[in-house]
Image (tube, rainbow, N blue to C red; front, side, top):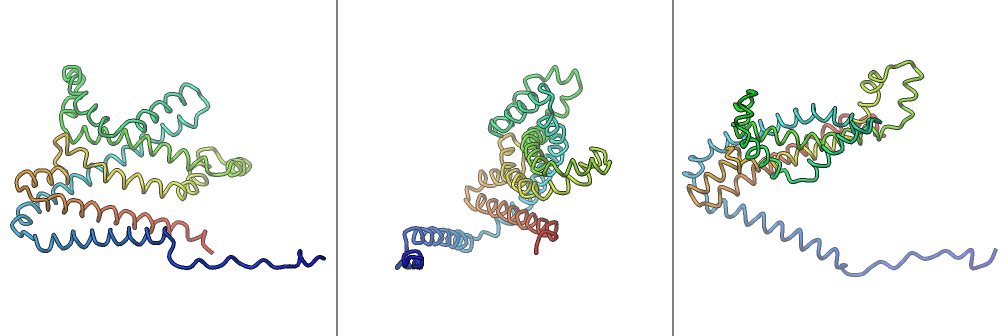
Length: 273
């Protein structure tokens, strides 16, 4: 064996000083810390108890509207996503094509545009809606928001569900079939429990995105959290109106994020060694 082959390569020399990426990272974190300190300092020195006492009840009411909007939309979207996901996985070209067009439209257009199409577009068909008894539903801005949000999140949830189910190895279906299990039993007892682990984080991200996107309904006269913040600012011209609402959204997002992480830890205990 030659001496060259037996030579051990030395490790590369340790970089001295601070690299540019590290400096940029620390600078960015420092700017965020300064920004946070500035916001807290402003709220402390500009504290207005009259403003808080006057508009806090409205903010609480708006928070309830926001939570109701997101909760109902997510549940309806989850129900609607099941047949859409089935259509996306179907071997029938017509069914698969219709499901693809649905997902393509609602994922490819802004939620604001979809909300406008429901709220203002359906309002153009008042006579037709009255004739079928649907005008009482669609004349309410909150109902229009729920309808638009449910259709939008159903498209995303359908793709999440489809991807999670298809991520389960095909051998799981074949093994269940060898045991004589029906496809529905296989899906409920074997496939979905495994798919849930894969889909949990995407579902959590979709829920967080829906919470933040719910502020859109303030534009169609729904007095949710953002709608009441706009009203408070219009009456007081105090920027605190938007700072407080931003903090409330931030708290909601953090609660949801930690909640999803807690659920993930609970359902993946058997995977940790």
